[in-house]
Image 1 (cartoon, rainbow, N blue to C red):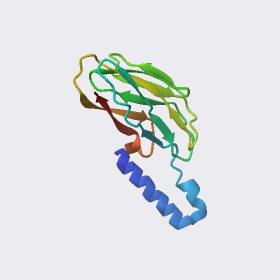
Image 2: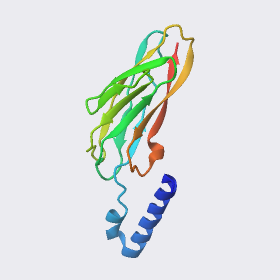
Image 3: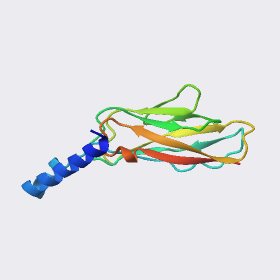
Image 4: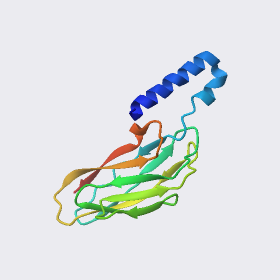
Length: 157
């Protein structure tokens, strides 16, 4: 069963329980667990051969803390490499430098956020252009995985 179909089935079951048992049962019946949302604003424009900073953020909008570690990935386009740091995660650059992975330990509380600082470096000699990258969080069992990815743009000037 696809995640979308499973999510719809769970919401339908939740609605049925609420109708049958009343509002007092709603909180327990409709608990969704940890639900990650990812955001990344476009970094400042950068000259070829120079670097700029990206600040991706992951927020737990669910009703429970994350039960397992999860990974925040920053995927960079060709001609761009990165390195990252985060006070709430362990970051590393994957081979070839086009992906930065930050592993966040279990326990991100509801309403809490974790941010990373990713230095992105543009290759020397690149023509002025706009390049797309994305930030993605992977948490097993996330009830709404569609909001776990965000696109950002790197403007080479």
